[in-house]
Length: 471
Ligand code: DUC
Ligand code: ZN
Ligand code: ZN
View 1 (cartoon, rainbow, N blue to C red):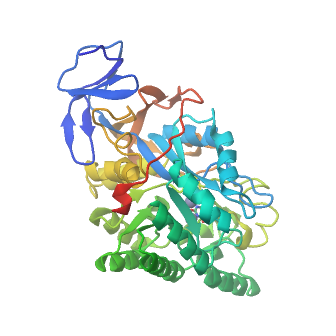
View 2 (tube, rainbow, N blue to C red):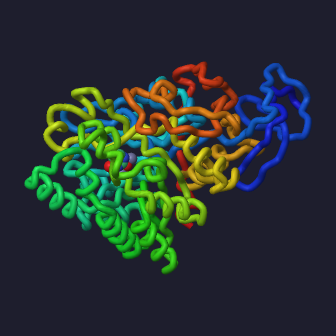
View 3 (cartoon, rainbow, N blue to C red):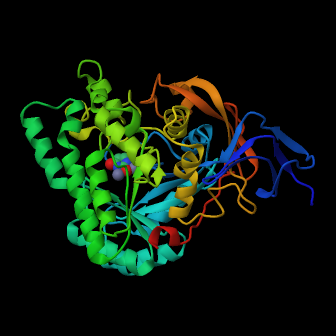
């Protein structure tokens, strides 16, 4: 055997299908050997008593994205991917947002400039299509799909991003032609607008009323509509950030009809509820939890767990969309204080995602280790065209590995998250199980809380059209 660079020795190796005790041999950033006892190497990590798992892939994060006039996102690629590594992640898929009137291709180039040399973990981009002009539909999207961006997100709400039903259908038709996967933000624009106007007229402007303005039926209606559009065009779709039972039922209904509908959920729907948006006596601290769709109630959390256990959900992502709380350019700016309508939507969670899923899922006996790996890494790689290079521990794969101490008890705090936001919505949650080391292509980036990564180590990942997602 050629000399190995690194051996991870004595750990329990977990994949989406198996759990086995073996050593992992790394050469030139790839996994080249799995065996009961590998020869020694210049670098060794003792993983006795630890779990050796594929590094997390977070396929839904927002970094360096404009948040509207006067609003600044709290993470660019440096702090966002640092926080990702702390949370046991080795790849992130972020969004390249087309602002209305802009060329999609130029938007993608702008995001490359923001990310280049700034990332600690590997990264790719989904496209957000907000302005599907004939040039975007006819030339830019097809060229970008071939160039390594085979997934786009579309919005059914937000003034500056919403697509009409006709536009959704046009984008879906391009996805069909090009073999791309469409991710859908399923909440209906008109219902939200109507509710928001009415709540404001009633003087109900505190952050909590964000959740009242977009109840589950708003998500259910849009999910059904997106599925119907996808059926009409004949494409699979991915419904992202599913928050509760009502949207899940639509997804299950569609699958019962033989439609290919994928689904994602996120930690906020497992451990937060709409009551968190009440803050302290309905004050602005509720803005810390404003995200869309909003967290629901305990029964919804249980429904989401059942969905994670039964295969309704393929991926578990953070939807990391960070803003600062105590900041004019964040959650409590001058406009945000006048109405929930203006509170930027989104919360940080890139570092907390996997500890929450592990602790609430594996440690509490709700899901197996294999399901954890599938939901945290393998299915993301398969869905978005990164498999088998990413998402598993097998010969030939990149040595993207998170080593977990399954017994470590940690209280989640802002200080631990290492993100650019000034708070975490998960403050004070106690978890059992923690990612103690993160390796990206064989290079240690997070060593038990010591951040040892090299900025710029993270590489751009052009992706393939995913047969898994489209089949
Ligand atoms: N949708 C997202 O996917 N992320 C944050 C905000 C939003 O509406
Ligand atoms: Zn969304
Ligand atoms: Zn998002």
